[in-house]
Image (cartoon, rainbow, N blue to C red):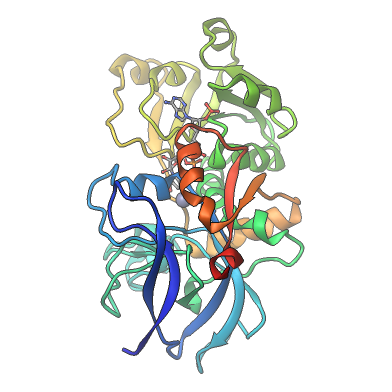
Length: 350
Ligand code: NAP
Ligand code: ZN
């Protein structure tokens, strides 16, 4: 397998800041496309992975899995992309194609183990995957997405992870008109969840720890907002059919299970490193479910991109340069971003 070196921005250890690195990308094979990366979002999962919050991180690591850019080369068998097209890459860059889940388009549940865009061993080619804080990426066209050209490119990038991660459970739990849907945490996932659930026709209540985000929630189109530290506001909150939990740190989920209707579901998408405790009585009374959801498949990722284009939905972003990534990580840790950092990857060249 021939490779070439490119510039990237990553880290060599959990405690070390990100810095310029050189990484190897494979040459374009017959089913691959090469994408010049224009913008890449910063997801809290990048931060968890860099800090080795979940264990198992391997270094050097180049994070970034909300990738958008322009196709600069295509392999001889590529059918769906041509040079000059806009294209995106999210979390998944390969899977087995053969298990029932892959055949259904649920590559996120691939029984033989999918390949994530960064920090994973490449089954087919060997070596590690490196993510979007880099000049370009080479990917099998079956794992690349078309970015509708009506969307602003930089603020569309977060749809590749934050967007699909909230859209997929909303579809699965049949969010729509007449449904009360709660969203916990107004971060990257949470703010886009509000917009998508509203576009699906639900009545959306948002729970936040931040007064300034509470003040902003109506602008984001939430129907109701609850300051979660305020016991009276929590007590008076109407019961929900489904609550999507996007919180990145340990928190008390029982208070939210108690806000569900009979048969309601608290759906975890946030990935705190520590286990969460559930009082058995809280799920027993009212036959409630505590469950979770993991990104979404490639077909559904294209669906959410098209849905967002149809409903004029993009993320509210703070556009930064590569040399601001370390500061952005520190601010993200504190929940201090409205609401997604996106890196202008052209700044890698300067
Ligand atoms: P984010 O932008 O940092 O948002 C997380 C929000 O959670 C914060 O803005 C804050 O909202 C709230 N929060 C943080 N710490 C809290 C605490 N101690 N108690 C209560 N609330 C707290 O992160 P993100 O990028 O949206 O990602 C959120 C989580 O989802 C991360 O754990 C990430 O790894 C995970 N994730 C999972 C998937 C998946 O497939 N399941 C995909 C992507 C990301 P307020 O300020 O409004 O309270
Ligand atoms: Zn993510």
